[in-house]
Length: 452
Ligand code: TYD
Ligand code: MG
Image (cartoon, rainbow, N blue to C red):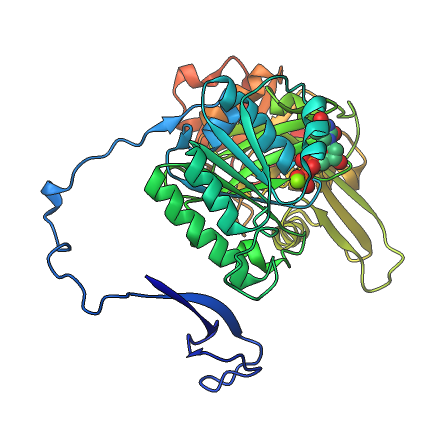
């Protein structure tokens, strides 16, 4: 196989051996990116090796998975690390990606797995320092401080690791391309060649990629279709918790998520996320409501906070949300105005999910609505009440998925009363009621009457 370099238009696929500012085919500017194009050295394909097969003749494969000692991490991957899979872990610089992967490496090494940790960002001495912080002792992890892809592949050849970690994909580059590390063409070339190695050797590989908040670093984004799994490591730097979320998984569900806390000794699994996110909740404050939400397959209690105060911005009051969808919140406020007769014309409305969580699902609607009304009325809900329910445009409260899980979670955290959609309550079997008082509501007016 012979390799040659060519410039490929990222917009229409036009190829040229020479760089040009504008694609002569589609007319787009700055779309020509250097890529390695491989040519078959022998002309003519073999026609015998590839043919369609009948479904019944396809061999069943059981995916072999490697379990790590960090259960949450296994769960996020859909039940452990699939051999030969290529996993991209994206996140902002400083969020804890290297820390997480070093901890995973330690765990794997302690279970007799051969791990090669390639760092293009840190010297061996820096890695040692971090390792000391994390309490690494004589673990058998191979470290390699290197940025040239060809040398890394050679090391893979020599060592035959079962797990490879590349920290980060932006710092590694192929000497066959002239473009600098971190450019789309380099990042893709690195991922493609590592992908082939991972498959050929059944070596599970983790690519670490830096992504800025705006997602501006195009590099790792452009890898999402190449890799098998995309994980996102998120959190606020001034909060200690971190969320590991799945964005894509060829071997498992994409709704899973794990929560960690960054401590002096590295990342720790948060065993009880609900308690964690409610730990600083004020008891009797207007505008605070606890909702039972689902994150992936796991229920999670979170506190929604609303603050409604008269606006200084005449005719243009503020509508701010943190961790909630702004349009959904605006819709709910319109429902409050129309169905309950409140007016927010001269009011600023601020909505927040405590602890920096983000909630996307409509099951939080009822919580948002109650928080807003509680703030307007300046009256707190009883602290042992939790709620869930979706709200429709006519003010009706609609059933949501997995009521049983939500109820159980609220009950296990000591909540006494749960406000939920009447439809969900009707459908419940006795054993799902979990010894908590359930109040079903049909529409927003009925829900408001319970408290105000
Ligand atoms: P790091 O893993 O280097 O982030 P990334 O690889 O995503 O850029 O984590 C960096 C931060 O984590 C740094 O600010 C220090 C902090 N940290 C701890 O709080 N405790 C620890 O045990 C370690 C190793 C790091
Ligand atoms: Mg790092």
